[in-house]
Length: 333
Image (cartoon, rainbow, N blue to C red; front, side):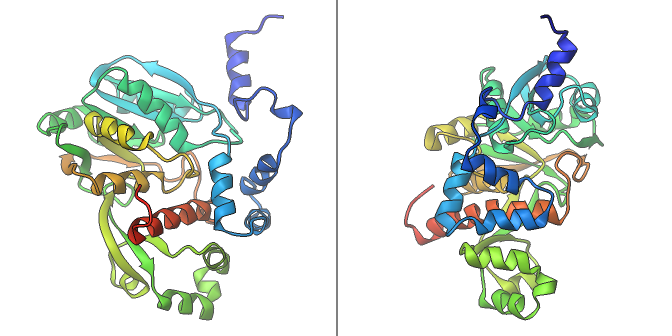
């Protein structure tokens, strides 16, 4: 039986994971992932209730399959290579990236497929960065696909031309936006936060409060304002990248040699950027600014809202665990 290329593509986009035998074996990992990816908050809470402690949850996150990752390349200037995770290479967001926003640069799209049961943003970024690094670029840009153009890409080219990629690890785009180059703090939760959550559970969201307490999440990312200073004790300041990141290839190579990965794939579609950026900030690499404006389409790919925030608590627990180890000097990164 022969299939057209279009039918093959459609079937691939519906494929949940890379393992073709998945339908023959449904494990506890699958069962828990069904709860985790549900749009029913009760089922997501059932997911968290299924673990006795933080170690069990983090172990599940590490063992969770990473989903599919098909590479599509668009030829262009290889001094700056753009890595773009996308659900559909032929979808409207990916088309806008290659036909308009990043036109002229070499692009590495990492297609995860529509309805990917085990989509892992960090994994697909790593797949794309490894492919980009084969061409020995000066800079690797990691961008969400749900973006819209403001400045022409020539502004990014011109700005990066004057930055030394052998000493600068991250080029933050400027002026900052709440979705990129944003000032953040790694902070430890004060007792005032726990007291507030206990007294006003509806305001603070009692589900989040319950999860943080159960899994001993003591460290968070907080913004620099008076309210957060009242609830959290700042330990480290950094500028996050979130939906649009510019990395020196020299730094990425150094990062991989030191840790064996770029993004930590135990994170599930949240906090992986912050984790990477913090490791850079704690190294000998400096950061710089490049004047370039691009804007995100908020929640265009993964959505926004309480359901997503509820899932994101798992990555927050892993992040807290890593920060606890870092600041207690029990282990290094």
